[in-house]
Length: 328
Image (cartoon, rainbow, N blue to C red):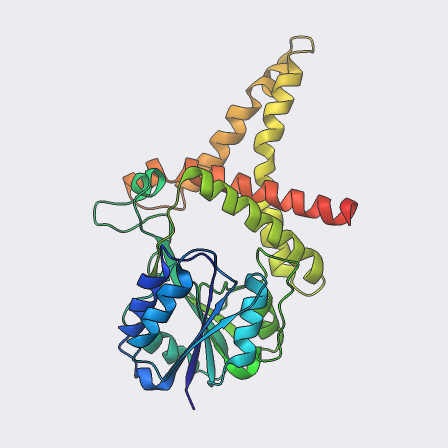
């Protein structure tokens, strides 16, 4: 019997899955105690051919390929059902984990009150946005490298390890295709276990990050968060509060609307304030963000993109709330 079951959903992943699997094959953990469950959503590219070739040289205890004609939540459900290990590890097909990934995360599993632990996926491939925010040493100040949160609210399933007995009965909703993996973390925490997020276990998210794709992802993440909040708001007050803090960014577009409307009114002190409100609001957010980062480069490069992406997340939140409340 394997000790760890790695679940990796794939769909049209030919550009990344080879690197993701190579990283797993090169882990410093005893791979004879690890099984790999690849759940493919009927890929239309060369993903299946790549997986079959990788299987021939797999050093793992077991290498299983399963196809499901569905989406990512259903793929994870199928992986959970098939997992035989004492621990279930989720790794996305576009995430390259470090050599010591499993050995470092397994240390946390020795703590009885820890139910899950996640590494930190960082965009590393060349793109305009990634190059903009990367430091000279190659570290990405977009994330808080090395930071550890020993009581996290939620974890995603990009590079995460859970105790199997805590997740084996969980079934993710196939209707929610963003943020659905956070359901696992919430369920584990409701059982009284802590979630750990270790920013020093840096994993490469090899999907290219551009401004357009980042804005789309943050918007969709906001929509997914809205569904989680509406479902769990009675018990997940921390999740609700953090979501409401994001909504403060809606003051930015609101200020622009107020400024535009102010030109219809008579001149005066109040009108002048309204006309200047976009500058006042943006400057306030910028000054707040400046206080959260160290180093001149981070202070110069980070706040404005952060403000932009938080706004996209906030708009996604608002869209998710409005759609669920008024659209059913």
